[in-house]
Image (tube, rainbow, N blue to C red; front, side, top):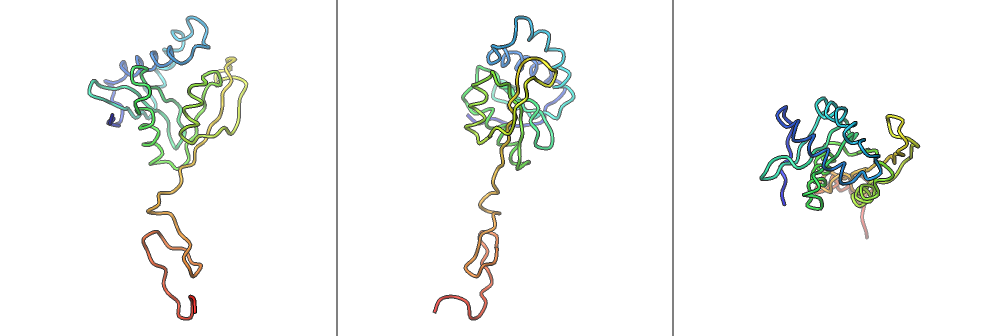
Amino acid sequence: MTWEIRDAEPADLDVLVDVWRRAVESTHHFLRPGEVAELEPQARAEIARAAVRVATGPDGPVGFLGGSGGVVDMLFVDPSVHGRGAGSALVDEAAAHHRVLTVDVNEQNTAASAWYARRGFVQTGRSETDTEGRPYPLLHLRRVTPPSPATRPTLQNDGTRAQRGERAPRVRGQGTT
């Protein structure tokens, strides 16, 4: 499936909070009963003030990524479309703008940790608690996207660097005899 990625609009807020809730209820089984409802006002406020990109399909928003400067603060996808590429499309779109991406993921959310690992993220650290001090350890992940082949410098026969598709200038006297 192809997803349209766009900026969030104020009218998206209720739908995005619903996506957040369904995603958390589906993946954060370690939360104690009632904790999702307690976290919802904070999630609503964070979604409302963050720079958010939205993945939309034929029926509207299905996921979103919030963050800035390569830091992914939130990535949530409706469980009804898990495995269909919406999350990957959001991460790929962020990586197109930021070569280095970082994200924290709850250690108990093993499916999310594995998902990020399949997309090239590696663990760079761990915290005993979440950012609010709750007993939910966080794994700190990082992904470096290599430059595209079209812009990656290559070493030429004469030892100089040139962009792909360019020829290094030929210097008289170099080469094989």
